[in-house]
Amino acid sequence: MLLDRDHDQLDRAIATLIEPADSDDARQATLDAVRASFAAHADAEATVLHAALSQVAVKHDLVSLVAQTLAEHRIQESILRRLDVRARPDDWICSVIRLRRTLAAHGSHEAATIVPNLRDTLAPIDYERLAQRYATERLRALDMLSLMRVSQGGGPRTPRRAAR
Image 1 (cartoon, one colour):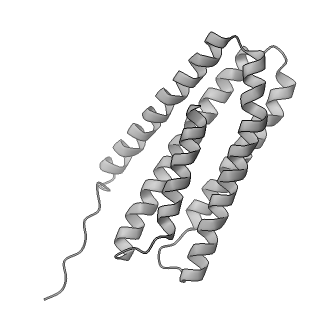
Image 2 (tube, helix red, strand yellow; image 1 turned 180 degrees about the vertical axis):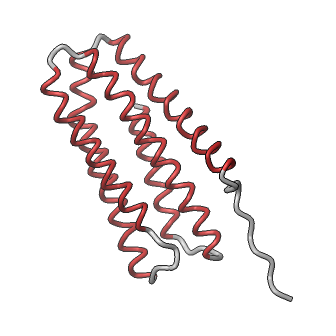
C-alpha cells in the first residue's frame, strides 16, 4: 500500500541522517529534506483521514484512531524540530534513533488499526480514492513546501568555498 511505501521511504531518509556527512551544511540539507518529507506525509495523512471520517458511518471508532495518528505526527515533528546538526554525535544519533522508533510505531499502528478499519468500512472504490487522494495531497504538500522555501530565499544549499 501507498502508506507503507511512504513510511519505508521516510525510514530510509531518516537512516541517511545517521550516516557520516561531509559537513554541517550537507547534514543540514539532508535534515531539511527529511523535515519536508515528514511535513508532506503528515499533511497528506491529516487531510485524507479527515476526508475518510466524513465517509464513515460509525465515526466514534475511527475518531480515536485518527487522533492517535495526529498525536504521533506531533511527536515526530517535535523530534525533528529539536534536531541540531551541531549537536554532539551521541545526542544526534540518539535523537535520530528515537525518530526512527516513533515512525516504526506509527506505521505499525496505522497498518494494524486505521488501514483495516478503513478497508472494512469503505466501499473498495472509496478506499482506492482515498489512496489516490493521499498521493495527490502528499505531492501538493511537497510542492507548497518547495515554493515556501524558494520564496524565503532557501533554495538548494551550496557548499561554502574554502578560505584561501
